[in-house]
Length: 489
Image 1 (spheres, rainbow, N blue to C red):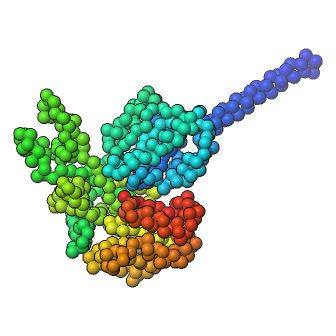
Image 2: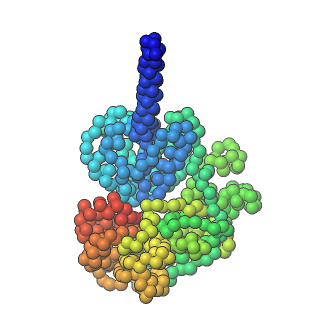
């Protein structure tokens, strides 16, 4: 082999080596770039949810953004670290406030570790969708606290915080409009993608005749199709006006009473009339707000073939409550109503045999019943029910079914707190204190605690009792392990 040939071979070997080096270098550059994008998504969507609304809207927001950008990450606020804040460039927050200005349970650990510190978040831009209810004090307080804290840390707003009252569609449109201006893409309303069910009213029964409290009704609804839900899920009902109210309104406006107008007015808010300028009746109706939805825990299982609710009839200065009055008195036999099953994963049960402690009062029995029925269906027997109402003689709700579970080993322990049966009122938190040793034992065995019922009084009292008995650190640990779950209202 001549020297010239050897030189050519050497040159080719060098060129081949350089070619392979470039290929490997480009591969690692692409991989590192992709890894960087995954570590720092273009948008991080964070939700803080108590009853599921915030999580649903966070995921809907992310789904819309992924149409043009696949680097979108959704995260529960309880899994958000301070390191995430230091690394992320843009965060969209969807956070709820429940009760009198309280942050969701899942947000407490973040509040404890973040709100007490001063951080440099000047690199961060954010927007907040704050969900709340104006019927309570301190409307959307957690969302506004979050905004204040972020601004104090030098973070920049992408657009003004959106405050939403009872999931009002017009309020939610502001969030979609803000996202559209931010991304130059069109967003669809979640309501348009939600399937509204047509349910038939089948049966109602007063469960506490003679009680000094408001009447409590069992209400059963039937669908035309096989419906699917899990224990802990919620039925959102589209409220409607009573026929008498619609006809009275049409008469007051000197309009004909016919089926078309009655159907058109059935879900419009006739208690809050917009100003009427020089316009036709039909043009005026386009300015009306829709009646809000009302939410109820589903007490039955999908296997039962019907939806069962437990509804306390509310009475206000203007008459019966909008939702409760319609369900307990206004609906006629076989009348059709519109509803949506909202999944509530934060109140779902794990499919395992861990001990279960169920605590609640009043119509909160619905959520507890669903879990007990599910546990019976699965064959898990280590269950403990603590329930409170007013009078044992009249308010012993679902006594027969509870007694059956006791007799057949599906309820290890049942404690009742009937507050009006003795001179000194007792409540479910008093039962917890009386059974503190048993509570500690069950928790040590891995028990999960589920609370359903009144936010005012009961939920706070139970939370305080648990802190006294278990200690703050252990209770926070239970929250992190999703062993302390609440559906309170």
